[in-house]
Structure formats: C-alpha cells, structure tokens
Image (cartoon, rainbow, N blue to C red):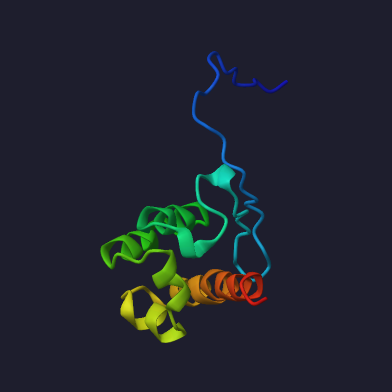
Length: 116
C-alpha cells in the first residue's frame, strides 16, 4: 500500500480559474475572466495583467520581456508577428507559440467583440 501525503493546513492562496490542459499544438488554454484578476477585455489590461497572463499560460521566463518592454493590453493587441519574434528578444520556439496561440487569438477575439 502506498503512503499518501496528508495536507495538515489548507492553502490560503486564492484559486485561479485556469484551464491548464495542454493542447496538441503546445498552447495552453487560459480562461480570461475577472476570476483571474484581469478585466475580460485585453485592451483594459495593465502591464502586470499581461505579465500574469503569460506566466499563467506557462511562459514564466518570457513574461518578463513583456514587463521590460512595458507591454500593456493595448500594446499587446497592436503587436505584429515580427514584434513578438524579434522585438522582445525571445527564443524563436516560445515566441512563435506566444504569437500564434495567445497574441493572435486575443487580437481576433477583441476585434470580434468590438466590431458591431
């Protein structure tokens, strides 16, 4: 019989509502709601909201680049593929995933929600 670790004190940290299921393409689904402490519209995100978004999405190392470059939500929505691949000085693999699976979908969602 295997021993099971027992938790003696409950954790007092707030729980985040995050779907951390790894997708086939290497992306991670992140639910975008006030439960994560971020406004639902990325255009309203502060720099730290952007940083926290990428940390939560599994890009801990790369998230600091967004902070160093002071990328807030409005800036994030204006970023091109080239900005992410070269302007943030990230390794190519993570930069491609960040743009294709996070920046581009956030831009598309924002445009859909604001084009009425």
